[in-house]
Amino acid sequence: MIMLEVGSTVFAGTSFYYDWGTKFRVTKHIVRGMQCFSLANAVDRLARLKLPENVQAAPAPLVMGLISAVLEELAYAGILTSQNLSMIPLRMGISVAIGMTATQDIKIGLIYGIARELIVRFTPEKLSKPLLVTADSCFFTLIEIKPLDPKLRPYKAISSFFFRVIANTAAYETGLGASLTQHALFNISRSNLA
Image (cartoon, rainbow, N blue to C red; front, side, top):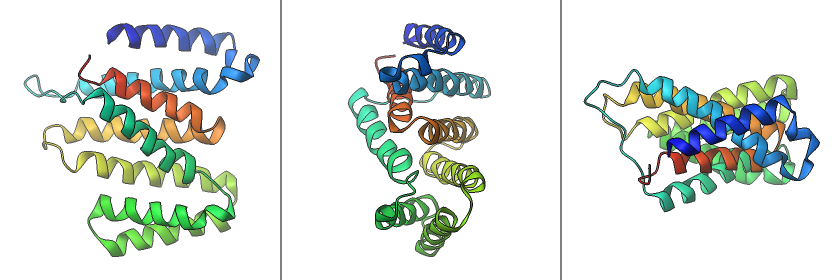
């Protein structure tokens, strides 16, 4: 899958330089997603340098990687980035579930869900977006590293945190399509086909 990574990096650099994301409106989500994938992939590759030589991250099955990309991005980039009042029950439910999953504590899940919704509703967008991106990225990272071998946790913590920051920023700036493209490409590149 190194060809996917090299090809997408060349495409991302070229598309950024020539500003294809704004010139071609139809494909802006895909272009932005490929740019984000290249950035997330670079951070992941740098974080992998810190792994001990005898420890490697296990590849995931491709189908599971694509399904998880769709489900996670619908939750994180689709529902949680929404400011719509009608999405309050879904945002609260997902926030509570994420908080509980990350900490194994229902109280923290409830506190996170309530605090997150208060930030969405009552904090100016200029301040709320960075707060929410950071909070969501921290909880995403906790969920990702919990089941891992302790030797893999530092690598996965760095990779997961920056992955989620990049994906949520893309979702806020461009929309769900960009973060979904990033996540799908990332999971494809880390699948057992690699």
